[in-house]
Length: 93
Length: 486
Image 1 (cartoon, rainbow over the protein chains, first blue to last red):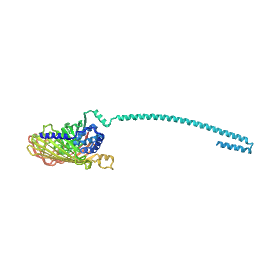
Image 2: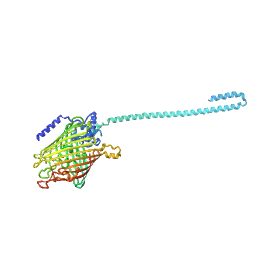
Image 3: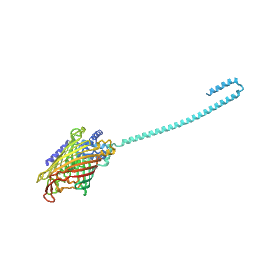
Image 4: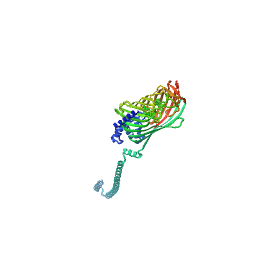
């Protein structure tokens, strides 16, 4: 068991080292537009895979920030896709 | 004209001299009077014309005066409009953009921002075998506390009001989620077991298309519903958009089984929430991988295939192993999902406690069915319906009669026909969607258990009595639930 934990810790550190750092929330308008377009394509499919896709108007942007972190965990969404869906939900309100 | 008349009269007078000198005097007088009359008319006409000219000149003066006033007013109005336009331009330039407003509003709300999500459900439950007609309520708020864009705390509190009992409270989820980078997240705390799709993703009332859980995830579950430990998880795109792969690896408190009896027997129920290392013997560890083969643009739908495993020692020297495979397919209004899972439990003094479970379900949302000829109210009603069917089953060597609980609660009919070694269930569902997360669900469960297996009964004795389980009567249950996701 100790070996397993050590291996797990090593794997964690390796993945943390090779991965890209989390991006800032600030992004350019062009980048936001790109994310919005991609989010509009992903939203009806990725969300509906488990439940009905809920419209952006249901929550405030700051609430979507928390909810999309929750959903990224629940569905193991790729981070870039989670960002796109988040941008779409916040901008489509 | 008047000169012509005068000329004619003069000519007439000249030539008239010859014809009638005697009448000349009288005619001359008449002519003179006529001339005078004409002159008078001419004078009056001139005077009238002069008056008209004067009046017209006055009107022209008035119009010119009005025109000057209008020009002045117009100039004043133009000046005012220009000033107001400039004022509006200045105001617009000082109004914050949506992004600035969002930041200002976030500042106003403070750094400790909580988000409340979750679900609530109210059930009507009927079971024919137990002659039950009752209600149950459940309230599951999820509290999210987002500290930064890489740290989230999450807690789920479940308040359950079963039929005929007092409210029960539990804490099925309490985690910290740390997003290290785009491909790695650490989650620590009490969490839904990331085994299969059921516990994490399908168990919320409004997400589950049915009122009840499929048999392998119900009262005789094969894997613990929640666990306490640490997860590593993440996802990535491996091909085109939509072609993803994700993983979850975790170690946790591990499995344990109900301990109503003094000795372990096959068929004992698995425990739900474990406290830290009280009921278990060493860590459990698990892994889950999901794969999405179809690109988003392929129009083949969204297919997910997954595999899970959870292992650990439930007792000193005795292993618990489980594994499962699952799929989920979504294409337009059609959705299908299914799982197969197995559990192996090493027993200290008897044969292994092996169990298998499965379910497959399919639903079709009628919102895309063309009903052009029907009245609008009928179309609106039909388009909100989603008929469903699910088949699930479970195989195990035995059950423990001391554990049988038939009190209905949210998502459980209480049917005794489920508490058998080989339950089988056909569930027919009809959902009416009032909003994306508000649904009225109706479900008819046909319990069709198969014969076989045995029943262990302790009844206060140290050694259980094992009896063969014969044929079990079929049963029918009906559940109607209003579920709201908020």
